[in-house]
Length: 44
Image (cartoon, rainbow, N blue to C red; front, side, top):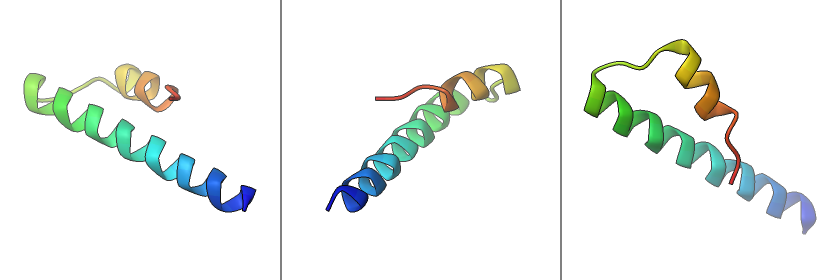
């Protein structure tokens, strides 16, 4: 059960990161690789 929970948490985290990047790209047209890597480093 723990493996499934870990897998689900990772999927949710990646989905949240994707939404944040999408919103920033919509607002500012593009984001720098530095900002993108900082977003990828975030965890919930």
